[in-house]
Length: 306
Figure 1 (cartoon, one colour):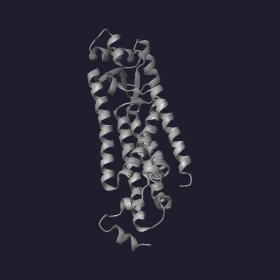
Figure 2: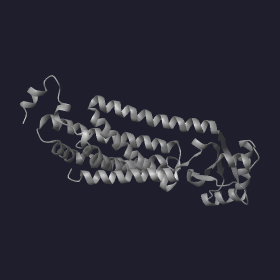
Figure 3: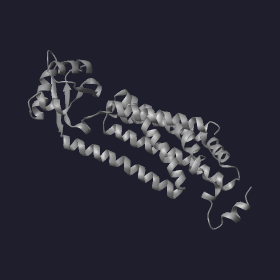
Figure 4: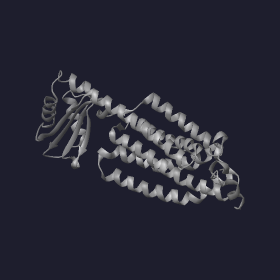
C-alpha cells in the first residue's frame, strides 16, 4: 500500500493512453459489425493463406480477409460491403462466391463453395448496438451487485478497476489491429467477469478484516491484499494457461476471445491489487469500520473485538 499513490498515477497514465489510442486508431471491425460477404471455400489441396489472398487480389477483390480452417483444406473469405457490391456491380453473394471459386481454382487447384452468406449493414449496426447495450448492462449489474453485497464505495472502486482492465484489453485490439468480431466482444465481457470476480474475493477479505480488527484503513487493506495474494496469483496463472491452450489449439476463429482472456488474466490481478484496493483508502472512497458494521449491534460488537 505504500506504493498506492504511484500506482494510481501509473493507472491514470495507462487509462489516458488507452483512451487516446482507441480514439485515434479505432478498431478493425469485422463483418459482424460492418456487414459484407462471408464465403467458406473447400479446396482439394491445402493452399497457404497468403497464396489465397494473392489470387483474390489478382481477381480484383480488394483487401480480402482470409482465415484458414481445418488445417488449410478450407478457408474463410471475408469481403467488406464496398467490395461485395462494387466489384461485381451489385451481384448477389452467390455470384460473388462463384467468382471466388474461379479465382482459387487456377492451375491444378480445385475449389468448391461450402457456404456463402451476406451480412447487411442494418444487421451489423444492430449487432454493434446490442454489443454496447450488453457492456452497459453488465456494468450496471456489477454496480448493483457490489453495492448490495458490500457498500457503494466498494462498487465505485470495483467498477473503476474493471473498466481499466477492459480498456487495456480493448486498447490491445486497437494497437494490434486485430479483427474485432463477436468473439472479441465475448473476450471483453469475459475480461469484465474475471476482473470483478478477482476484485470481489479481495473485497470479501477487506470487509472481514475491517469487522474483526481495529487497524486503520491502510493497514487493513494492506493485510487483506497480502492474505489473498497467493490465491490471486494461482487463479490468474491457471486461467492464463487455460486461455493459452484455447489460443494455440482452438483455431483462428477464437483468437480474439482467447487473447482477451489472456490479457485479463494478467491485468485483472494488477488492477485489483494496485487500483481497486488502494481506492478504498483515498478521499471519499475511504472505507471505515462504521461503513461495514451491522447498524443494530455495531458499537457493542466492535468493543468486544481486539
